[in-house]
Amino acid sequence: MMSKAFIKDSDDAEDPEEDTGIDLLPITGKNYITPLGYKRLMDEFLWLMNQERPQMTATVSWAAGNGDRSENGDYIYGKKRLREIDRRIRFLTKRLDMAEIVDPAKPRDDETQIFFGATVTYVNLAGEEKTISIVGVDEVNTSLGYISWISPMARALIKARQDDTVTLHTPGGVEELEILSVMYQAIEMDPFISINAG
Image 1 (cartoon, one colour):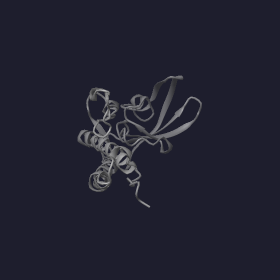
Image 2 (cartoon, helix red, strand yellow; image 1 turned 30 degrees about the horizontal axis):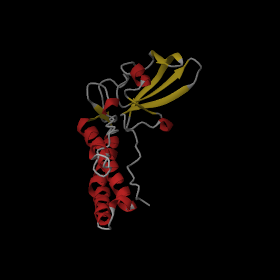
Image 3 (tube, one colour; image 1 turned 180 degrees about the vertical axis):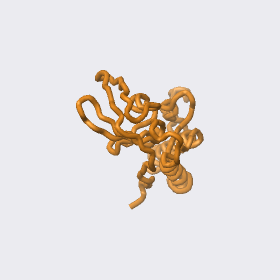
Image 4 (cartoon, helix red, strand yellow; image 1 turned 60 degrees about the vertical axis):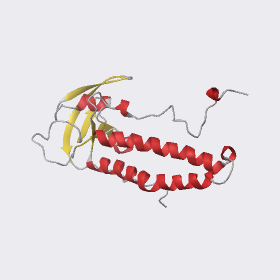
């Protein structure tokens, strides 16, 4: 018989691979985010706390009453899903606690200088023109041109002004970018949609 010290009780064990995602943020501990990005995170948090977690807790409780837990698929899956939900709740709690909401549409003293929330159009030496918006780490969507404020591209652009040329250092080499325009406007975000939404 094997000692209990060497047996992993999967029902009660914490997930050792918990990823808080906090390490993605700079040492300042600030989580810059747009108002709509914050709303999306908050909507997910509230859905997990008020709907998904209570439903899964009820499922696990029901499954626990159905006999042998070691061979009970509903119980095993439910416990696993509950751990995933709790991990996501912890992640969202930390992100929301660190959030510093910045409204890109709010008027500024100098709208030609690039900071968080700017929508920037630039051209590279090959003549390729692109438009990007600098958003929070939880709002990145490359298909829409939304880049994180801590990305190499954003770091190259931040504090530059319209008509400046900046140098972007990438693994592929160095690229010169000429800033054509800087705008501050509302940045649209897809709303949070629960996995149960039909």
